[in-house]
Amino acid sequence: MKNKILLFALLLTASLQAQTKVWFDTDLMIGMPDKTPREVDDGITLIMALKQPQIEIVGISSITYVDYSYDVINKILKWHNRGASIPVYKGSPKADDLGVENEGTRALYQALKKEKLTILALGPMTNIASLIQNHPDIIPQIEKISICAARTPGLPFNPGNGKLNVFDYNYEFDYKSMDVVLNSSIPLVFAGYEPSSYTFIGNVDLASLDMNNEADKWLFDVVQPWMEKNEKFFGVRGFIPFDCSTLGVITHPEYFTYYKDIPIKVNYRKNDALQVQPNVPFKNFLEVSYKYKSKKKVDYAIRALQGFEEKILETLSVKN
Image 1: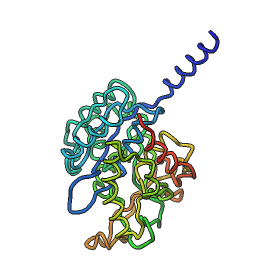
Image 2: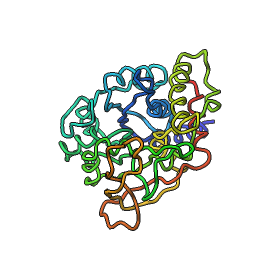
Image 3: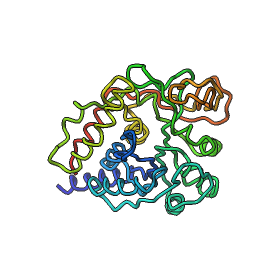
Image 4: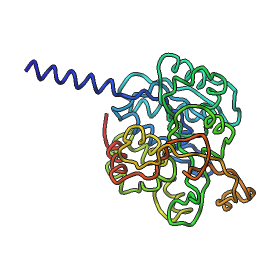
């Protein structure tokens, strides 16, 4: 019996030691009242992250719509966080003020002074780039940044049935901040549209949600308008949970295939999303290719493998 107890203690200690410390930076807009429904994947990713024993979220910062997201993030934490209290900070309100300190950048700086962290960057890079630009001394404390952006050459962002191309929002919303991150020495992993396009969540996938549970009912209700919008524009009732892949390469790296140490480069090309950007004939594309001579090399997730979508759904059905 003593040997079994000792073995359990050793396994528990090893598990705790293997836990990745994470800072969660998000442009969360789930459920935001607006003229058009907003993306829900940041919210679903936060719920998923809170239920992963592989990581510990030490802080959360917001970017864009920070007043709205502050309350929603805290609501999600109240429902789903069963660990230590997680502080929430407001970051850049419009993602257009590179270099301007905010509550989020100051808190992240202090957190990194205490310990090394992995950063999940689910929105534009303004908060992260401002930290890097203003405090280059802190760069060695950043283990890596997982980013929802980038593509391989010639790949359109074309969810659904091919009716409409969309654009690389997190990159294009703030080119300058991404440039700061790319010019740093920080290890980067990109997991955006391409791997996420192998996952899809529809109404049938939400069947495990408990409509008598406040948190589950809220999630189901706010997801419906987003599904309807996707059906209107992409011909499919459901959605691709983009940011779940950005988290997944940290929590479930074995469920993805990668291009390792692949050069990344900004190329100026003809816009392939003119339907949604009619006044932008040409624009920058953030692309990876082994043909490029760029000095900056990153890891790039190509595909989410069979089973990862089930991991997302399993997580949503778990009650704390």
